[in-house]
Length: 391
Length: 109
Image 1 (cartoon, rainbow over the protein chains, first blue to last red):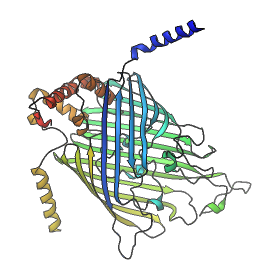
Image 2 (cartoon, one colour):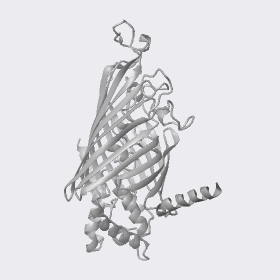
Image 3 (cartoon, each protein chain N blue to C red):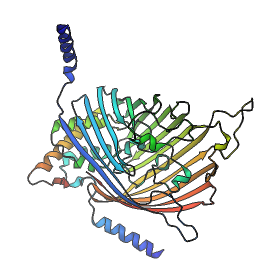
């Protein structure tokens, strides 16, 4: 028995030895952003409670990347922001070929283009586009969460790969199975993104049913300094504790670079089931079934978009223009501030000034236009001033 | 309105007078490396600022090789296998220049 075990051990060592290596290098990186969000109110329009996370907000992240060998690497990232300390990354990549990488652990499932740039050191404005917003949009509690708050971090496995057909054409794919978004109830209205991200009680699944999704993308080098990327993403899963209410998120993304000008655009849409077997839970009449009973579920749809142009005007000064928005369509809880259909459109003009390599100032002005808000509010202004350090 | 314009022009002139960008000044680099630096600046600024790679403390050629390979595999990186030699040429030179006693070549410090 012992000799069999020894043989098995030796076989295992033999199989794995080509990849075995000690950790060859570590790289520590981090970002710190302090942002002040000012949203003016007059005496006739007092600031509502839970208007937004205005005032000072700090986001901090520290990331350790370990290249274990040319085939394996590990990443661990700790974040501190509006929700306290959280684990933003804790995963291992094992690459058999460029076309086949296996990632296991806690990571951001590949979706859209913005996910790669969610770190405040990697996007030029202080806040995120509305479909990816996580708490910085105005009237957040009235309107509800965005389509897919970023960073969306989850536990699971992802297979991915990239292939260059020649120097000018790159194909990417990623497919994942993760715990999925959550709501800690079996009668939900919507996904609870705080519960989805929270470590309390632990980073565990709430319904034992994985969520699946992925992205495919194509990047073409149209000229020596012109690149175009197109991508499509999808996620599907159940989010309530009984795994009966489902969500589907679809996305399309575009990135164009011409010289030093970047144009980025994305569209996201999420369809989310709502538990509906009780009319008392809703503002609007539910449609009954043929036998006169109420259906178990109805649904709401949220979609959002952004188009962003980043234009360097000096070596140390970029100007950014962004148009983004979000819409919601569906029944609401009694007393909601939203009509059956509501939305917001926002224009942002911002600048980023490089004080020193790795240290930047960000400033922006935002104009919100609302519709479908029962409190009669139809526009808001907001101003950001912040500093970000990457190290 | 006039005050806003004056303020804007003043800020712009102030920025122009003190230009320390995220990247390096190509004019201060060895001429043979300028195409490699341009490639680096173009490819490596899609997802993050140039300060990320320029401020890391990576010093070994082997580590840069693994690091660039990892970045090349990122979705939509646009870094083809043919780009790698040029990127490594610049990064290896940059690391050595930062470590050199006279340092600071091309704003490397």
